[in-house]
Amino acid sequence: MTEQVEKEPKGPRRTRRAVLLGGLGVLAAAGFAARDEIGRAWWLLPGVSKPRKEGELDYAAASWTAASPANWRLADRPDDYRVDRIVVHVTQGGFESSVDAFRNPFHKASAHYIVRQDGHVEQMVRELDVAFHAANRHMNERSIGIEHVGFVDRPRDFTDAMYAASARLAADVCRRYGIPADRGHILGHDEVPGADHTDPGPHWDWDRYVRMVRQELGAAAS
Ligand SMILES: [Zn+2]
Image (cartoon, rainbow, N blue to C red; front, side):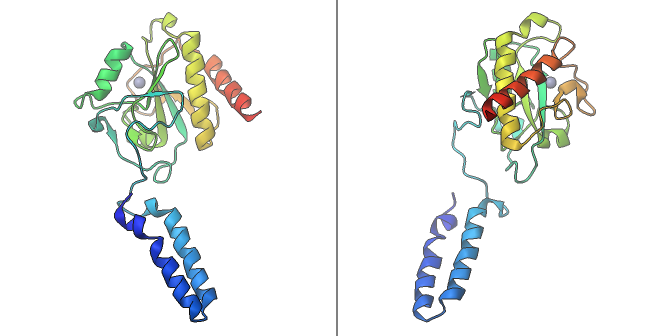
């Protein structure tokens, strides 16, 4: 929070009391209400970011390792960009090397989450921010990127625990942003316009995944 914002609430209250004594209480109350409105949306002002804390998570079941700031862009989603897509990836490498790659300022790419074969979820970029995962600026701005540890040509990498953990995460993202759990909104990296990547590949079971995301949404709702 900035200093100006911290000081904001003291001013109007004093002013209001003074004006009330002068017999103009209605006008002062209206002014106070307007101030309150601005106070609630202060981060919409240019150059002001929402408060964020190191290590803060968007998905409670995840662990946090920060990606290098060179691999993502500061934003204030969903206020500046609407979040309405989830992009599914496969790392083409192990967990440690993927985490290391996103921490490397020369890697030029990152994703919000990495899901492991044992169901562990690592968050590396805040959902507020734009991760560089889809190689398409517009898609990056509107999406959450989820990496899955494994290789596209190794079906055994896509474990039950991985599907379950990723579906729980995707359902949580869908619920928080009001994203429909369907193939129009949950897509593969290979389906991003202009993509030259082939992940998640032919062994990723889309029917199963989308069904599991819907089941999670249904379970959370009831
Ligand atoms: Zn990818």
